Image 1 (cartoon, one colour):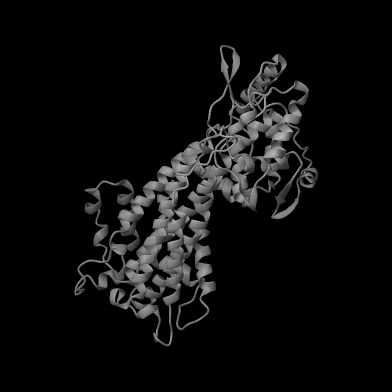
Image 2 (cartoon, helix red, strand yellow):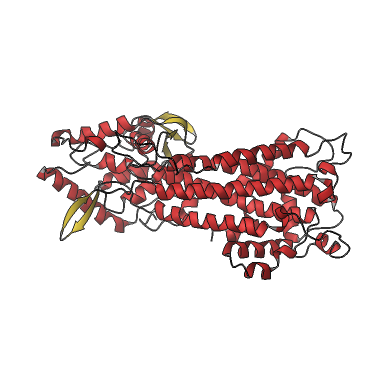
Amino acid sequence: MLKPQQLTLKDLRAIWQGEVVLQMDPAAWPAVEASHRAVAAIVERGAPAYGINTGFGKLASTQIAEAQLAQLQTNLIRSHSVGVGEPMEDRVVRLIMATKIASLARGVSGIRRTVLETMLAAYNAGILPLIPSKGSVGASGDLAPLSHMTLALMGEGRVRVNGAEQPAAEALAAAGIAPIGLAAKEGLALINGTQASTALALQGLFLAERVFAAGIAAGALTVDAARGSDAPFDPRIHAVRGQPGQIAVADHYRELLAGSAIRQSHLEGDDRVQDPYSLRCQPQVMGACLDLMRQCARTLEIEANAVSDNPLIFEERDSHIVVSGGNFHAEPVAFAADTLALAIAEIGALSERRIALLIDATLSKLPPFLVQNPGLNSGFMIAHVTAAALASENKSLAHPASVDSLPTSANQEDHVSMATFAARRLTDMAQNSAHIVGIELLAAAQGIDFQRPLKSSDKLEAVHAQLRANVPFYGEDRYLAPDLNVAQQMVLSGKFDFAAHHLLPSIE
């Protein structure tokens, strides 16, 4: 049941994964219908109201005749469908459609009930508009992406159904859905808004959660593989600092390592006084990442429920007034995405350092490059180079997008957020960090194998078993790239979410 203003992160994650059918809460319809009646009354009076019977942007002072209002809205969608680049993923398009429906159902956008019913029918039939990934600056709404969405609902453009592309008109006809014919204000309501950038940022969050969980598992496994100490996870250390993410993560590392026979074996007689930072400071770094993720999650949950089109129609003294504002400016999303980029980059950067530690025999006390007969075999030498390359790439991608602005629409839209790119690059960054963490998981599993017959904790042995069920021990040099891809997909598919389940913002 889709209840406007009540979508949770858990709901949004389920929509992203394609697990839900959308059904509107009947309590939403009265406000939707009242808002549309207000638009109809404005049209009948003929007084100029932006976006209802005027042009758009710099052309707002041009009043449009009532007979041309439907054409005005249709022209708006066609002219704004100028996106370029690869189409967005189906799971992102599901989020775009669901959050746009939820926003319009708040009853302040002036849209007809039939438009929302058509959107719901298309969503539930699996008819997903083909939306190019590039072409939005994240202010005045995600105009181009949302125009491509709307164009498909009008029976123009192309869609994907069960992964196959086809003309929108054919897909709607096959599902028995009549294309939308736009009335006054409706085109603008559909394309003004932050839903595309928010959906892309939510995907970044959900992927970041999976990389974070796998990074926690990998980091704990590396502690045991390198015969590191669990003293840095002592709760007293973290309590006196007081950072909530750090405290939660340290608690979790202690739980993961509890009962390890490997740890027990070197409590005495180990001449190392302190571990390198990549082992010792995991609660401080990963805890800070967790705090950022939780903050971003809160911002994105609010935005997913927000009304972000313009103008808006509010009830006032038994009547309605039209108020122009700027909720379409996606600065909150841009800031959230830029902050999330820092966390994703740091998860990967810390993991890369642990891989370097594991392959360095002087630090890890393991065979050089984690392979028998080093010299004849290169082992994980170049897998670490791959991790270093990806970590470096993420550093460039982590540069904040929100500090840039390029005026558009003849300087009417003179400050923009760049939220759509800020959010879009998160997927690439998460994929990079997932590769890095996947390499560490394989390297740490190799290190655990070299500690046999000693065993790690039950929880970390479960992580090791998952890896070994998919990738065998590296006894001698072999074609390694497929193994790295398997490990990355295990990370991205959430196979290691169990290792940090209760820490993830969208599951809490």
